[in-house]
Amino acid sequence: MYIESVPNRDSPPAILLRESYREGGKVKKRTLLNLSDWPSERIAGFKALLKGGTVIPREQEAISIIRSLPHGHVAAALGVARKIGLDRLIGPDGNRCRDLVLALAVSRILDPGSKLAAARALSPETAASSLGAELGLGPVDEEELYAALKLEYVEPELREDMGEIEAAETSTLPRLVRKENLRGTFHCHTTWSDGIESVEAMAQAALDLGLEYLGIADHSKSERQANGLDEKRVRQQAEEVNKLNARFAKEDFRVFFGTECDILGDGSLDFDDETLALFDYVVASVHQGFNMDSEKMTKRICKALAHPKLTMLGHPTGRLLLEREGYAVNMPEVIAAAAKYGKIIEINAHPYRLDMDWRLWKHARELGVKCAINPDAHNIDDLQYLGIGVGIARKGWLEKNDVINCLPLKKVEKLLGGSRFRATKTNYPTP
Ligand SMILES: [Zn+2]
Ligand SMILES: [Zn+2]
Image (cartoon, rainbow, N blue to C red; front, side):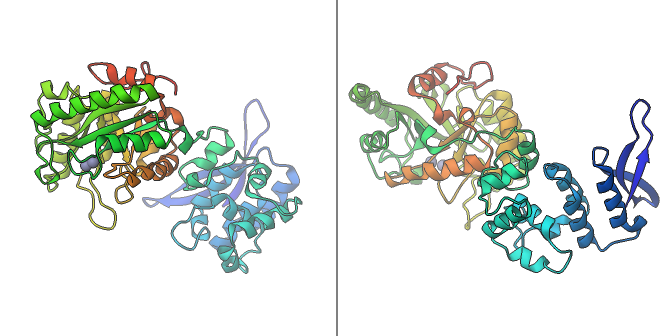
């Protein structure tokens, strides 16, 4: 690693921290950091530190460089740190970036080598006050610490090294959805299939929680073991929901009449179009035929997503945490198909599912895919899973505007009301 002054036609030379490396038997060079705006004495100190290019042990090297960086250059620091192995300094437990900024701060005040183990064991609070002392702030809390680092405050859920530091530097962090933003939910079961409460009891419980609407989505006919509804019972349930809505209308509350419709082996849905037209919305899920190869399963789900009556995809991988892996499926393709057809993907908030996984949401959101946070409730208490779902949505960078449950009743009615459901940028209302 060395510092090089590179001539620049119209301005002073660029001062670059560079390194050479070997690739395919050739020696190549790359720039690690632009030091041009550093004060000259800092660059001089840095040159001395690099000892004219002699090799410094990696950890010491990492620490030295991080220590040398001005506060507020955190993204650049991270870029260097990743390249030269700071990763190994952060976090003892594989959760290496949980408190990335704090670890970074600690690494800045470390004596090279000697206190490394101690630093790894530091609690975030201790790390924060250590840095506070370093910055001459005295004891600080997290928010003050972020401010001192010239970073927007990073909510704890986002501290996963998925670009949040860079976003904090450029003030482009999302305004994360909050539990109190939820106005209703979808995908709940009743005694019509395998739930243990009536539609009315579930709806009343949702109303008591302060929600404006509840979506009932009992199983479809192929789910015999779950008492799935055939076409005749679908019509009967529709009548019951209509009657209840006449009553609930006085309280500005509505039961949406949905179904959790099986995606059959060939990607078609478990009901014909005429039956599907009876529902306010359709959650479509895979419940059987898990043992396909990934290509077939992906085609199957994408075909379902293309169906004009499908509103949202239920628990996209079918995983049961600590019990069974999800089926083989190419999730990036599924997400792309959801974006293409304007379909919602569920966060199934049941603690055994938490599906779609939070790691996939940042990308899905960038493609404009909307989310529904669904408890998959089979009884009244299960409605509490909504809070867990919000936690997952927050880890997935989702804002209020990304989550359909944040829409008030009238706007959801309008959105679901179209005969071909599509949540596109142009038709999606602001919550
Ligand atoms: Zn299901
Ligand atoms: Zn379900």
